[in-house]
Image (cartoon, rainbow, N blue to C red; front, side):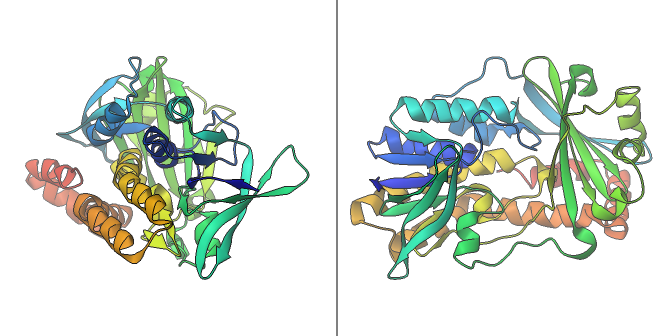
Length: 369
């Protein structure tokens, strides 16, 4: 059995940033990640300026990450709508996550990758630790801590074990996500570009090492109707960008995607990033909101360590901070993503934008901080 001040489950942007902040404050923190680090994940790989500000506070920068400014939306008819409200950088998740976790380890966080959290240890209706299994060991170990943080994504092991409600992925809205790195010309500049097609959307942005990230979300019904390339080619601008390029053999996929709000604290566990409720990737705010939840949660977790656990007043304080800083953007983004996924309301929005081009700028601005 090992004892820590805090255990963070999941080494994505939220978990890595929180472990760094806790370790920097002097806490003995364990960071568990089931995959090997560094790792590749499906992600749009855009970090808005809100997330860049958190990274700067953490002392993490990437001089090779291209600066991105502006967003463009291309419809199936080849129409273009643009906004100047989007600013940030492109940074591959493999390098971003490794940079954050490396910084956490340098200030004292105990990083354990290839480590599966099997279940929480519950005593008196409160989580007091976790049981973990390391890939290269035959046994299960116990880790104990007064505070446990769930940063293990939309399919959080801790959320399932505690019986928290499932996120939404029912009916025709079942969607799958994909990501590929291609040559930088696919990004065609220093903007974040979005492409609509029936049953989904795609996005491109430049990332470091002279590459472009192509990420796309497709409804399950469309996957039964054609190849991925045929679906992407339905958008004429994206078809021209891709030209004769084949999707790489190491194309990353994830699904079925789940969205919605889950919880922020339960049974003494603090939930951050996608574990608390993932944002629709259409808005490009996933990484930034994950980093912001870590920044909001850090002082709460430190106070909980001092008190011997997360009590109700601390849980309420975290909920209030989240409501003030993040909840509105989540609601707006979720609503807009729903409207744009369904043909009738989407056609209505696009008609309104054609008549009033500045409306697109207002729509995009409503999703920013």
